[in-house]
Image (cartoon, rainbow, N blue to C red; front, side):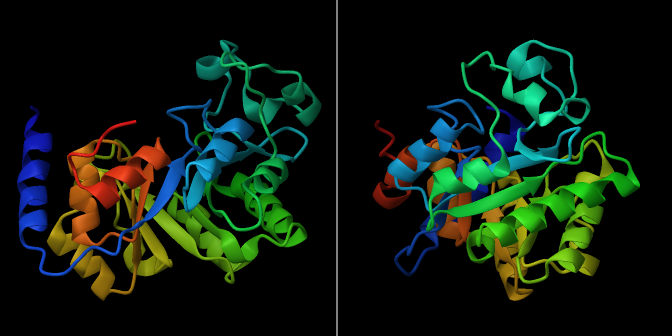
Length: 269
């Protein structure tokens, strides 16, 4: 057991043992859809998350060469298609012709929203790897236009690790809540939590290992909604629910819900 995991388990045990009221339960978000069961960020993964009872899905967006907003996590096709091309250098027609190693295709944001249906919540993460300072504009504008055109604003949360992306979104579409992502032991300062003090977004999305009862209480006291990622381990799921986080982002939302509602021992299915 790593020191990081051991420390979390100690804090988690305290969180569970100190409960003095029943859990109402956090929202369950499918990470890139139900990505443990279907190809990540695919229409099949979003459909599966909805069928399995997720409250929402998290998905990643980039702009391709023709300015269309596509749902894809990586800057290039190497990991998921075994090809070197970058998403930003390919047209939508080019991307339509790509079959990923999983057999899935790359959807547009509009297709993903349609597949999610009218009630499933959607966390749209603005991917900024490889972006320079001014190139975020087309992505922010493109997402805002799609949300408006599809009447999806009321069920969408927009997030990013990059403080500039969060700031641009809050200026561009203040009616759609924004969230700042951050992680433990970030290799880059822009992926740390410091920016929330001046951004003041609607929500904070910390990596799960950063959550402690005291931190979650403190963030709540500052008025933030807390959604944590990416959580699959049964004891961590139960402990985070006990801390009172508002949402848990997980690769298997159906299983996560069973665990959260049934306790850390219910890891079946």
